[in-house]
Length: 325
Image 1 (cartoon, rainbow, N blue to C red):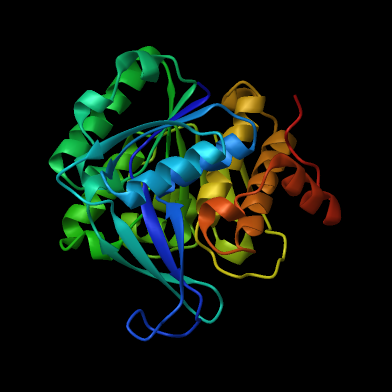
Image 2 (tube, rainbow, N blue to C red; image 1 turned 90 degrees about the vertical axis):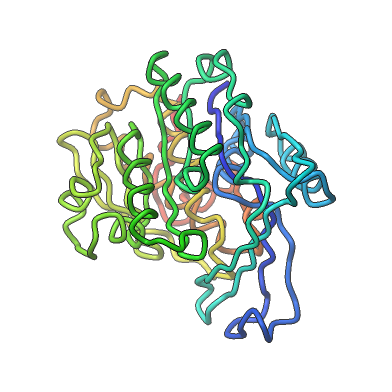
């Protein structure tokens, strides 16, 4: 397995009516989502072997998640929880396609430690996780078990922490969980807004913010929305712009970035310390293109691009693809 993803799988109900509230909106698109699920789907669309370990409800939404992920090639290990319904997220779009979330938390909180199998973690090249699975005791124990197994086996860890206030009534506990997730990561993808939350304040000094947030890994990429991404790996620091596209909605853009980033690193055998500045820049440029393309459609997984789509966009803007093999 190239990447073992663990964490939440859910259904996003995305409003198609920009500017309306979740109360007044009348049209929604239902799409399989959840950051780890999206990353697994993004990797599968890029030709990588990706497996998702998650918990869903024993209901039609759980069946939809399984169907949608298998349809794009994800190897699924989904436990159906008879006691909890599949988690639902309701997504409101702003006038520029930005989002606001409301959640009906359910089965994703009940990822169990016994779902984490040592041989699967040890057989992966990368373990990818987020911060939402640190919310409840059982899922937290499962996540930390996977991280510990990865560390002992020399498997690189990848993290994309997501701060969702609706899921954390106590902001202090939420920040602690985000920082804990960051501290375990070899590879970190984080949005500038989530980094500001983790660091306790917004700042353009991303290196300093990462230090406050507790990152001490090999590579960090801070996504800046339509402004691209800033990144650091050892002594190499850079920033790349994002291709300009017609934005429909932004759900899954960060997950597409993460999938393409991991794909690029896998293409270079995860030898992050050996990457020269030009190659690293190309990898991050390709990740930005993947994120941009995902904003051009509704729902994360249907909009996640394949390699041909990413490379076509990069050719349009005259940028190398960063995926040499």
